[in-house]
Image 1 (tube, rainbow, N blue to C red):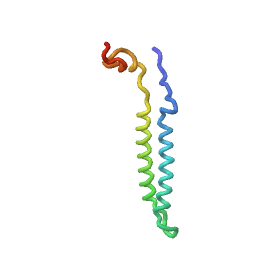
Image 2: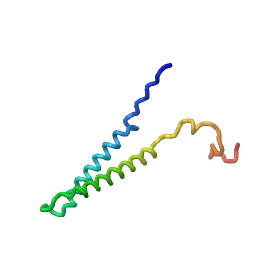
Image 3: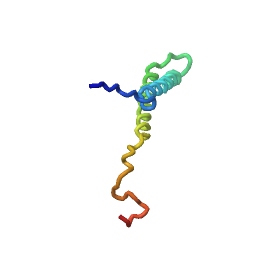
Image 4: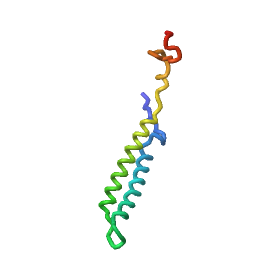
Length: 95
């Protein structure tokens, strides 16, 4: 028996790129949230607001990326071949 090595997924279907992108987006949102949540230069940085902004941006960006990835998958080529009901809309009266 031969062992089949698992095929490596291409970069477009890998999980690394969306995670890295979401992490960077979350880090930017955390930085902006910490700075804007201080209320002035005399106050301390608000780490709690930064963490909340990071979490929200990370999760929302991952959800948007996953929905866009599912919407862009192409159909199986076998779905467009063969005969079926209403295959030709040019001549609906002919069999």
